[in-house]
Image (tube, rainbow, N blue to C red; front, side, top):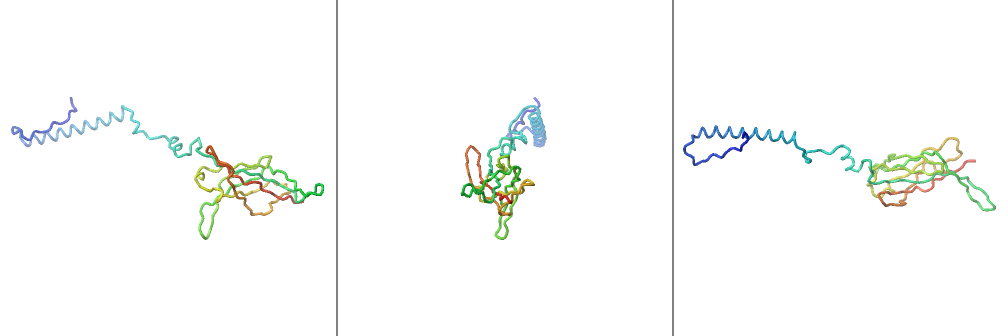
Length: 199
């Protein structure tokens, strides 16, 4: 057999020459090195080793929590309505209101704050449905932030043209409150955002 481990030289053997022993020792070491290289190649080619296999991109993405299956969901809900300034109904003043469909809504969060300047960044957008309601799904990189309601606000970017409604305070942003949580879903509500009908 070619790949035998080298034999140890008996130091007490007086019949072998010292130079011959050194040559044999070098030869045995070289033979051992060659056997080691062949052994590594046979392991790399012929056998499956799960410890040497790297995870795929999809597995790494899923382990990090950004895969197809979301680990958590954070939603911001609310409604946008237009209401008349005043409406008299049998002596009682009651403002009738109607939903605004197609309003563009944005959720803005503080990206970082300093003592001098607070900067905001747009996180996500949504559009109101025929009932004036909106649901905005917050990106997953913000899910771990505690007290999200303290750093995020909802703002109406635009309403459809032709409506005779305008927001009471032009730069007003609506704060959030935690409405529900459970089963990996947190829901925040911006409540009812009202526009005044200009007659």
